[in-house]
Image 1 (tube, rainbow, N blue to C red):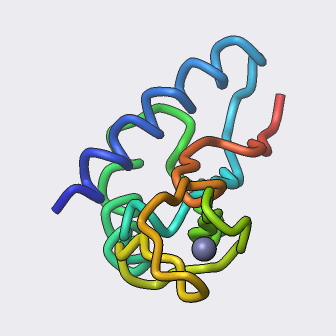
Image 2: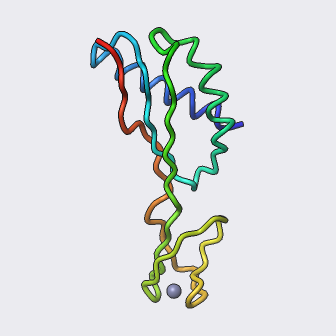
Length: 115
Ligand SMILES: [Zn+2]
């Protein structure tokens, strides 16, 4: 259930943004999540619906989630590929000398609210 912990830290960050931007009521939070985190969207949204009620000004907020594919680059042959499973083997040359290009993202992209 690591979605709960992630939603909690996102809401903590969102709370700080809300204070800094002097927003009264938050209507939407857009987040970017890399598939590397293996988050289940439905669980994430359920947690958000439940946890947002503990935060002032987030009662009507909607969570909008954009998922980033996990992209890996092979350092041996230069091949770039997407993976669904955490297996970092190059399909072209079978090398494990690969590095993650995208997929580890986890941040608030934008936040909408009323002043
Ligand atoms: Zn390769």
